[in-house]
Length: 219
Ligand code: DC
Image (cartoon, rainbow, N blue to C red; front, side, top):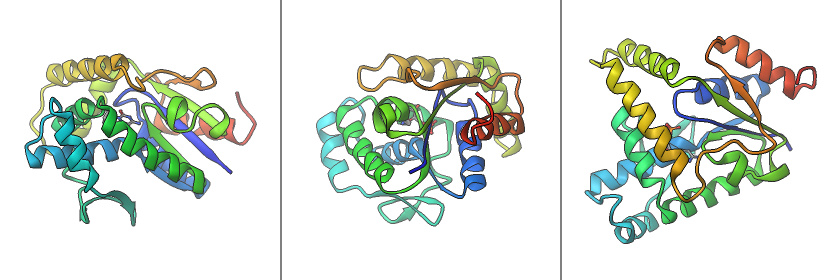
C-alpha cells in the first residue's frame, strides 16, 4: 500500500501540497482538518460549546461526516465553503481537543487509512492515525508563523474578504499553541517524519522534493 502522512501547523501548505501530490500519484486525498471543521460547524449550529463534552459526544453519535465526490459532507449537506472560515478553524481547534471528538474522527480516519492508498494531512497523522510504519512516507511541513500569516492573508484577500494581517498572525500563533499543547494527540513531528521548512519554497519546489523522496531519488 502507499500511504503518505503530512502533518504540520495551519497554513504550512499541507492541503495544497497534499491535493496536488494525490493527483500526481493517482491516489485519494483525505483532509482530516476538514472533518474536525465539520464537527465544529455542527456543534456551533446546535449551540453546543466545547466546554460541554457530554453534549458534544451525544450530538456526535448521530452525526455523519464523510468525503464523497471530492467534497466534505455533514449529515448529507455539502459543507466545503461553510467550514473554510477563520472562525471555523479556531473552533475546530477547540473541539478537536476533546477526547470524544478525537476518538470518533480518529477511528474513521484509521479505517480509511487501512482500505486504500491515500495521502492524509492533519496534525496527528504520522503519530496517531498512521503511526510507526503504517504510513510508507511521513512529512512534517512547517513555515514561519509570519510567512503562514502572509499566505493566509493573501488567500483571504483574493476571496474578497476584509482581513487584518496582525489579527491573522495572532490567530495562527494561538492555534499553534493550542494544537501543540493539548493533552490528546498534540501536533508534533513523528520521529520518523521528514521535516520540510517551506518558508522560502514555492509550491512546485515542495512538490518536486516530496515526489523525489517518494520515488526514491532524493532524501
Ligand atoms: O488543518 P485545518 O486548519 O483544517 O485544521 C483545523 C483544526 O482541526 C486544527 O487547528 C486542529 C484540528 N485537527 C486535529 O486536531 N487533528 C487533525 N488531524 C487535523 C486537524
